[in-house]
Image (cartoon, rainbow, N blue to C red; front, side, top):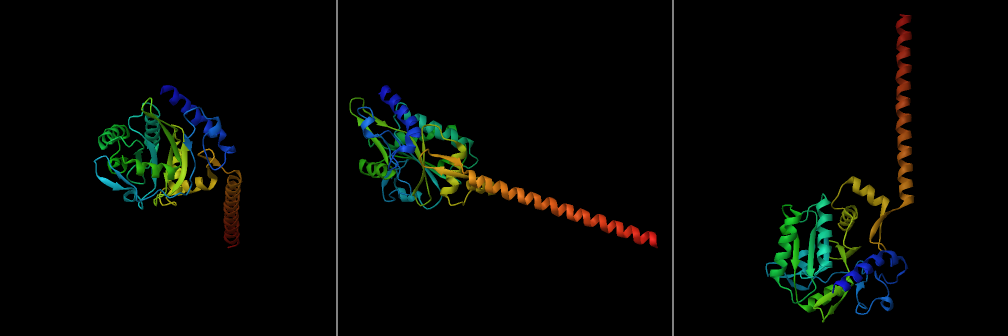
Length: 285
């Protein structure tokens, strides 16, 4: 299983470099060049896809919930893991928690997080233990109400992973799952806005992604300027600078600066001329 995990880490890295040449948003090598046993492992982008709100899961307290219970309020981060994963899932959760700790936004305030197990054998007790572990690391008040750890039946898991384009395979010999790594940013209505790949996530990209998914309902003026200058690239799962927009903004700033300079100089010149006229009047008197 360790070898599978290493291979999957390589696939995750390849996804970023091969993304530009792939079709249909499949962020992993084509199936015919993937290692044996990993033919159906990858991420197929379903941007703007609606995550089915009627799907039934159980939260960490064992209560039956529908995904719709979490929709309609604020943007969300969705990540698909399984709690007894020996390697990659822990890395995903650790990378996500590290990025969230840097963000000035707070889980449960400006956005929520949905962590869902894709192993139907896992229980709410396992979800409770995993939630306690990562909330302790995160250490911010209010996160208990905003970071949800779910488990569910195979039917719900299949529908959710299919909608998200998350492809994985079960290895009967090891009793583990082969899977790649990604998190998704959802709109408040539960539509997929963005994908971020690997096990480390740039806080700046996550912040901009959450703001954009919220339709600018969170964030500040500086964020709006950044969103004007930076554009999300689905092929890389990152924000990149839009050169023309930066040049336009720089040009506008230059014109504004020159205009202010000319206004100041004009007023200064007017003040000087007024003072000279007053001096002439005084001498004449």
